[in-house]
Amino acid sequence: MITTNPFAELAAMISPEVQQAYVILMVILVIGGTIIDMAHKKSAKYFFENSKKAEKAAKRTVSGGEKMSMAVKTVTNEVLTSSEFENPKRRLSHLMTMYGFIVFVVTTAIMIFSLPAGSSSLVAMLWHLGALSLAVGGYWFWFGIRVDLFSEGIRWYQLRRADLFIVSLLATSTFALLWSFSGSMAMFVLFIAASTTLFGTVIWSKFAHMFFKPAAAYQKKITRADGSQENLPDLGDLNDPALQARYPDIPEYMGTNPPNMGLGIKREAPNHY
Image (cartoon, rainbow, N blue to C red; front, side, top):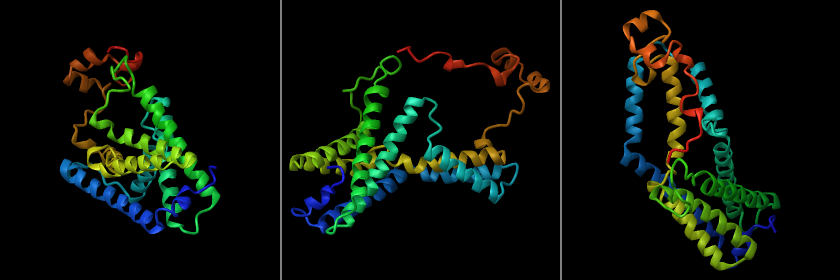
């Protein structure tokens, strides 16, 4: 069952050309929505203006080799492994959702654009496994991580506009699997409705954030390397007696060894709702 291309069977009712046109339309909606989102929030303008300010405040020139190294670290840490998530459950859920989504979308395009001949059973199997990984990671986040009554007080049935992305994402993977296994046209219609909502509402969802986040993480590494520090003042060594004499509140509020103040807010799990 999981080695069968469901779009090949659908070709008897909906021509391959129509299916391919739908995929192209979704790509256009994502690109257009991302551009509109960046223009509306002026995130790109802010990013480039902030980058210019950082260049003027830089204390040293970062070499091309250093920039390449930081770019690689950004891809491996922030993108491929999501190392910014300190909560291991949140990180694993995110990785399952992210890689499941990538595999699901790529194999969908392969299967549809290989029509009418069809695609290999391996691609079809990866499509089902990608959708399953996406569903497991997404539902784990929704019911096990997002629903944190101790710290957030959010129940699973409380929907906000910010939830549009994850809800449409879960609906897409869920109805895709149900359609493939049952062959029900009702499930297929719901699958298309969910996927259209997912890709057509980029401007109102966190979808565009995925494209901007790696660039912002890379820029942050650059500012630390060139000494501009995101246009924040360089305080120096907090243990320096001269600095503590200049700012006597440092030892008062941060102790005699500021870099090692302890766990702080991480001392206990959040349960103060």
